[in-house]
Length: 460
Image (cartoon, rainbow, N blue to C red):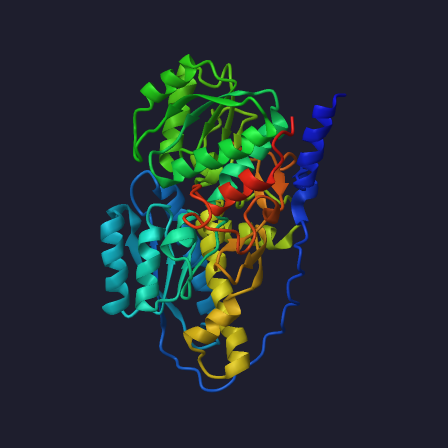
């Protein structure tokens, strides 16, 4: 065994990667607070409903992510309301908006929800193209907001560098590309010719950048042999597929998502795109699980936005997941995706923050008191422990991806629960106070610069 091989192995080990079911219950660096026994609220609690605005894709190809988001939100609201509402008195009423209307319309709708509908809280949002526009408006309006997704690093790096009212619970986008790169480098370390197919907007550009900066560190000599940049909502991927095949790649990497990805993989099967190259995706299996057919290629890295997949952890290794999947299936007769998990736990996290704030100040707590409890919160979710970093209001949890597999138990293809890859999130994202773009560097994100400056130059 050469020294180069040892270097690669040692570096991958240093990232704390776990493969298989043993990754099910990783322990956070700081233990979460012990759960508190439910108690009667302090002071007078108004009985007026709490109005929530929930924006997600209700139509179009992205609805295979957006519909599960709304279903997760509704499930949590129903559970809370069945107990009398938050603090036993304030039931949740939800106003929905279709994110498919476009960024400008979404900004106008957010303003309308707050100023005309008088919403108390705003949640949801799928696209990375929308949160940087909505975040500053939420801050301007003083509207407490928890984004379920819209994961772009740009939200905190530039659009809202000092958030007060805005939070986000999905893993930050840079972790998505890096997780995919780490999984691919570990699985196929000899793949050096990389072809890319990405949606032509911020999410795709970010996925390309972070995959390549990380992958080149682990696989020296890796090079890009083809780039395809389809527009969101593309229905015909023929030109991108044939261009990719003609570049004769070792590995094809993609961040095409939602209904677009379903169209891409089905068309690619007809052209044999998966026959002679490996395939890795950041978010292929992020859709509603039943949207993926049995015809999907097996053994590919089929990411879930580094967040959550319903078969993992398996069995009763993490009871929060088992319980959530059972409740979701009973309500909707389908299985949840990472958007379902995020939207569902957003409401329960908010409820917990309100309860803690009430215990401190009495009565119905104001936004300042609720925010103080959200900052630094550790919260148990179906995906594991979620930590809200106080400095940037970003949610962090261990990143996860896996391999596609057909099994008899489901009428659709799933991620193999015995081969899931988990990476501690702190090992693949920039630490607090790392310089942001436009300060001491002009790299795409803080994490990109952190990887460039701190990861070994060669770990082959």
